[in-house]
Length: 448
Ligand code: GLU
Image (tube, rainbow, N blue to C red; front, side, top):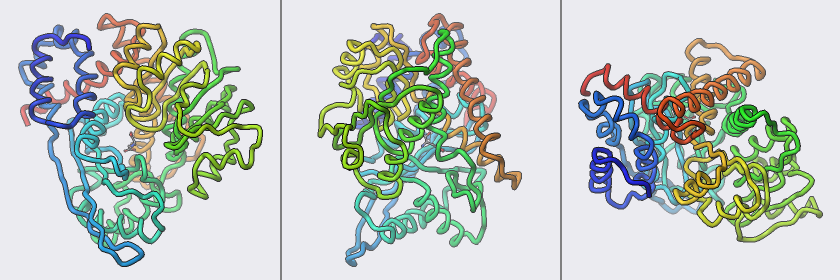
């Protein structure tokens, strides 16, 4: 690990001491602190007002019991979380994750990242995150509905269009947002569209929200390529995961002239040299909620590899779109050896610190999630704008707004990197640009 300067080192030690056992949260904090040396040197006012120390402590953390009844009549208990991390720029904003791995450390890492991501979008949104250790895999629609209703029965008192606006993340898509919104409406007797984003198109949702994270990641990479006089034309791309982010990243790569040759799920990966058939993948994942292994039943010249790492497949561009720490140092070494030139994180923190260091040493361009995957939350902010004005925009208009936002984030990363002596370093640029905007707002708002 690089050595932190003394003040940042003290802050990091305090984070470790105050948040024992929350490894992912430590990792996310460390990644930001590693970039802030030149910023604190230039701006002693941030240190004087303890801005970074305040940023590392969530404004509010809510942990609650979620009791529900399964189809067999058994009472089940899950744990629900909402971490309202920072509201200097706007109401807390960030998704809900339903996955068995969810615990406080995961929610805090995601919430912490969200602060800087949301700041980078240039939209008026603070950072928060929530979720539950509930596993939707294999659960019936009725069970998912009852779980969502139980979850919202506590969450509703903490959220609101001017307070905290949840959305989806892993395990939470249109179906879950529907059940959550329905229960919020029932409890509060208010049709408050702006309380959740990722809603369906017939009840206050925005065009492009489903596609936005994946599309946005690819728009960001397009800017990285353009900055080097290059394009997606003829590029071999590997995407990990096969959820929302992966599917729509693949769709946009195809539209821009690249070929996505592989994708994965937690059991294994599929390689289709002719290009992943997206209609088939959507049918498997969105309609049938099945595994990617079934892909090869319909496409017989594709191959399925059980276990193993999708990063063994040689590519020009790698888009990790599955989950945190899915791409490690070994995977990074393989990608470098195979000539991969660009890695952009569609998921949140999918690359381990080892992997990120290896990319830097090998001159691989690396776009961190808080910049590259910010299109999802940015489009959520567009959904909030439409809800506030009781308007609804066309697909084309919304997609153009998304492309402009990603272009803006790309340029802001490069400008900040340059200004603080790290030219071309997207990781440093994203952390610095995201931080400065929040830090300045915190200074202006006083010690609160
Ligand atoms: N969960 C997404 C993210 O990681 C989207 C959050 C939102 O739309 O509020 O940014």
